[in-house]
Image (cartoon, rainbow, N blue to C red; front, top):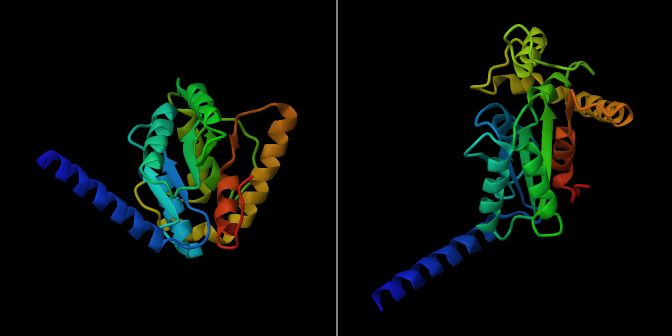
Length: 223
């Protein structure tokens, strides 16, 4: 009897918490963004949401518990199951040389017909390509050279034009926000180039998530 009462109390508390969550929401869609790292990409999206004055009950950002793509996807599914009000889930990770990349993509594809709608938001070699595109259009591929990873080589290029960049803080966000339209234009141009040339390095579809957030308050939909 005692254990039944404890179960009922927990169930009641969970229902109350869900009701509070629902009451806090704005009328537009709810999206969960799960990021591979715990600093730069979640920091960027938090600053963007703040700038756009979006409701944080509608746009939730979580760093993943692991950096492997499949870990990010599994954690996203776990979080979404605990919140029935989530409409969309964005899994933000780098393609890089992760062994579980294709496994993660396949798992997202297998969830395509279910609610919430899952989408992979992937960059090659890393998230910082999106930041670089705020300044320059580039099709330059990045690889391991002179004991530096592809991501390190891209970071060197980024810091030449954004010296304030640092993973541990987002003070550099203010240097980017006025250039967001340029970044979207450059990312779309790169995507077209990659479609024609079958190239994947460099590549990103972060602009699709950013455009969705820009239009979210006005009922924007993610294709």
